[in-house]
Image 1 (cartoon, rainbow, N blue to C red):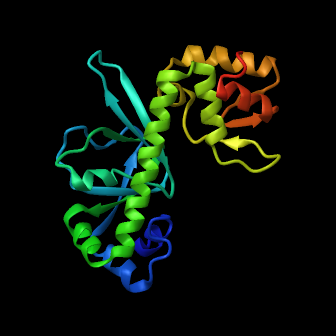
Image 2 (cartoon, rainbow, N blue to C red):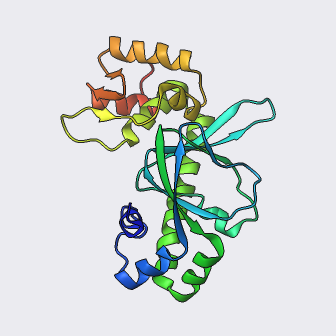
Length: 225
């Protein structure tokens, strides 16, 4: 597959001109991973950042008790590990979630040289990092201040949706539970309650929201379920 096309599929590079894109292409390489393959491990020396082209990648850390904590899931078009450009090692582990996951790796030192020459690209990278920090802040707030139903409701409301259409979820319910800091069994019981109260239905890889205002109340903690 054309590397230039793969780079343009990422929002970070979508509006670069041909010369700028060619400069990024020279320090980029496309790689494919099977489901369960590790892209990089926590504490491994950082060698660059990545663009998810197809599939999905989960970013997680393993706690002292041996339990995995999923920090976030990266889907097609999104960048991950960009903060590691300014770190000696990766702060978490990245694993391919889908049967065939294609990523583009951008060389750390080469990209730093591009940033030094192109302030516009520097601002775009800073923008993606601010979004990542905001996401991490919101996730930490949810974990510390919200109960599982409110965390799940917030997650569903954050997913891109089209009016009248079900929302496709690209990850398993087990991964969703890990992201929310709960168990698959607890999530299953919650889904049964939400379906019973006609708030939403989650079947297979699709969520259909039946009562968005009520889901928003659950997300804010205004309503318990």
